[in-house]
Image (tube, rainbow, N blue to C red):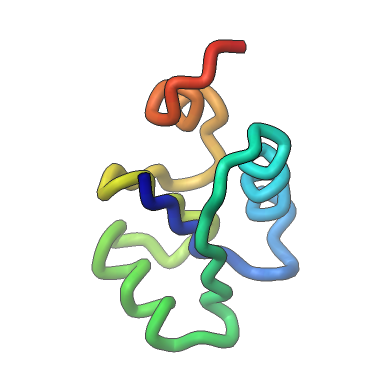
Length: 78
């Protein structure tokens, strides 16, 4: 399973998404779109969005921190 979070250091919802994945012991790639232009371009191409976070779970795109949707895609039961 491949998970990528496109976010920034100053975004509170990005921090919540990272903490949620860490708390559930799920590995992810963290891409800071404020300092990485390639990651920013990739995020916009995948989601059509410039707002963060954008979370890519095996090609399924979640815009924003949607805990319910993340749990569903990651099959977390709690």
